[in-house]
Image (cartoon, rainbow, N blue to C red; front, side, top):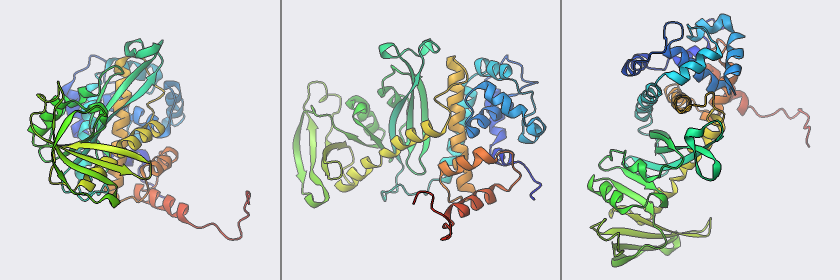
Length: 388
């Protein structure tokens, strides 16, 4: 039997603790740290994410039931729901935001050579946002429309590895366009967006940054075609045009020409119109790039299903943001471990295994390898089929 470290401790060994301490020092807190440090707080919240805890009492009960193992988990302070609640209320959420962003940079380097379905040397980002519903009576600071409350998770996803490269948490009423005002666009990179991001002044800023965008056009777009390229209609393409905008408010905001690509998708029986400022990419690849935008929809669905960002452990804005940023940090940490250990299992499978094995003493790489081998073992022909 393996007598080494607990699985949870092995997982947390992949955290850059020096970076974590720098993030803590950046935002000094008046909340006492001697008995319950920032790292204790992070580890307790990470444990809650990995084991799908539903409340502070749930976290406290599970950890106290394994009190003899807390030191080996890396938790040095006393675990009490009141202590954890106070830490979530009073410690600066930006500490965990900065740490999550540092983890994201580590993950992006590991996944830099990953394929995402389109052969392209440039970095490709998908931009979108999702709403996280809240109860208005408990979260009055997050008032949304029609008597509801919500926060909005604005995300820019690096399609190589589906790693969020930029995340911003705002009130539910914040416009999606606010995300574009906070991004430092990388020259040569592609930004894939839906119609909600159509603002030609902001798109022109992307163009001036020598970056590229692919975005769905709105139905009321006013333009004039100045040139047209032949297309292969069998591939679904309907037109490939160079256009200039003629709208009353758009002509001055975007002062140069655009490329307009129309594509018919047989699977959905829909016609899509894309705009881009890149004239060198094949028209079929323009449509293929936009199709990859669905990676971000899958990412939002994945984190809502597998991370604890529906039931919150605190009601203040600070507590909600801490929980969301630590959830993102845990997602990225598991992605880092997957790459470093060359785990073939999906992130979903890894999380399911971790949720049951955190207190075991088994080498992390062997844990995933054995679980995957068992899952792939064909059923015995002598096994009774209960549902046959």
